Length: 462
Figure 1 (cartoon, rainbow, N blue to C red):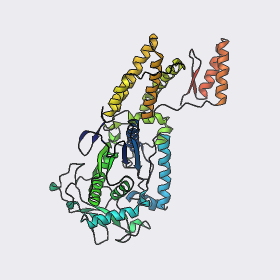
Figure 2 (figure 1 turned 180 degrees about the vertical axis):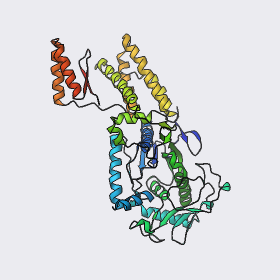
Figure 3 (figure 1 turned 90 degrees about the horizontal axis):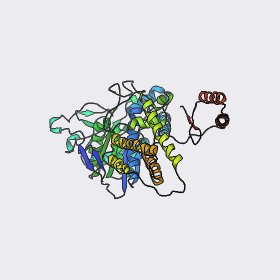
């Protein structure tokens, strides 16, 4: 089955065909490092991680670039307020972000370009826009994109410029109005910027937010590449403006597939720092979530559906993941090392087909857990072949390659291991009082013990 993704620019699912067979060039909008990223941001980053993992699973070589926005209105304001350099501020939050993506098992990008390292590329792109008649300098020596010079504006948002006023200008990096306006490519320095500025042909200033992504994506992926991702809040104005300035500067197509994830909500409201209704990854860890439970919670809904988040989802995630690990352990106990044949279950093809259909994770999960139920019934009746055991373990491995929600094998501390052995000896002597006492001691230490025909099974209760 061919892979189909919902392309925002087409407003429908379309077959995916990379520009270069076997290779996918992927750009994802990274964090603005003026503060700690919240889990609404990470819903998008984990969707992008699933997309990348699936493309790799399908046999593509993926070259992935994620930018770091380390200069914009917010970073400048925060650095000046805290009386530190912008570099000190952004390095702090970049390090936090890198630690969070590592803890959440997000595959690293091939490049993490910082905006402040690419000012020269941005200046050259703005100069190309001026030369092509798409940009103009104002009296204060700012430079704006001339919207009425670009006929195709509105592809992502389906805005009809003939019904809009486009002769007004906007200097802010972000704005929420649906009325498109000439937007800043280069912002002349003002007193509020303090010492944060760069020299340019137009005088001291800094780039606008939108030009940053265009310059960096084109530098590392070329004028025309395969996929550009972000959250739905990036569609307008950011991605709309990226298309306009990139196509106008290069006179070539820009991106073939635009993919956007929906909002994460709290009690029906968008999660945002402005509203103050957000959680950081560290907040969820403090509430007892594991990285795998966070991943499952954020992947459990389709990426194009709004997801209402609650701390109560921790238990659902924990129970679901435990169901997988218990089943995996059951297969491992039945595995015959002399049997090398592997019979992958029929459900695996249905599972892949669900993901081929615009990463339909709810359907893929339903198929996977339906297979676990039917397989458990088969095992209960003893009606299985060892090739099915091997195939089942292969299915679980492939499932986790894509979703990364199965915890790594726990390392049991030596003192806990000694208590387990002591308890097992007491059980063999039918000294149930001592065995129960040690079980309670293990529980107080944070470990759960379950007895089975093949010996005690131990896992952390965290």
